[in-house]
Length: 166
Ligand code: PNS
Image 1 (cartoon, protein in one colour):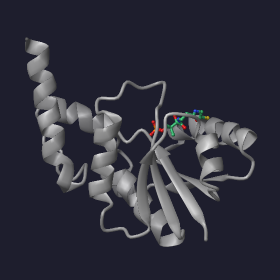
Image 2 (cartoon, protein in one colour; image 1 turned 120 degrees about the horizontal axis):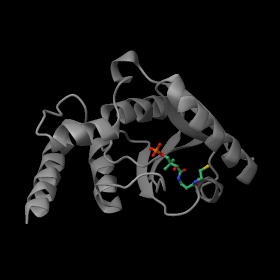
Image 3 (cartoon, protein in one colour; image 1 turned 180 degrees about the vertical axis):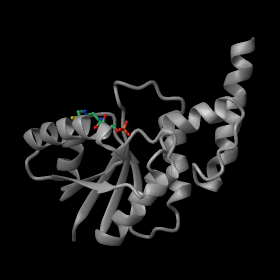
Image 4 (cartoon, protein in one colour; image 1 turned 90 degrees about the vertical axis):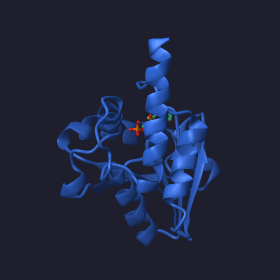
């Protein structure tokens, strides 16, 4: 049984992430999507919200499960005896950072290989930050994120906007 881990901050999950998760699920026997902390980013959604969004978005993918972990990815992949880490690559601008992370993760856990799936051209421009920006400014996020989480994102943004006015 080949186990893949798809790590990310998923703040929130986008259709670009979904494309990578689906393609990983076609190749590997078991895919664990894990919500992690990226210390370079401030999350808008709580870990619970991000896990819930992912669980609902992947509910039809029988070999995909969703988890969260607050520690190192290398420790998580060791614990899960994962064969590979799957990450999406959108552009060359992603590469340097991803390459650095892949080498660090290999040093920390040589038993798990990092693999990169190239994004489809359709999702090349898409990012969670872009989704948040569009939503914050009242734009339509249809076609950016799974339909089942659109309302949740809009409600969260509405709540945050109201809080900032009080
Ligand atoms: O979706 P992102 O923000 O690009 O994902 C980055 C993430 C969360 C996978 C990365 O920051 C990570 O692995 N965080 C866990 C802590 C860790 O292992 N850091 C060292 C990575 S070399």
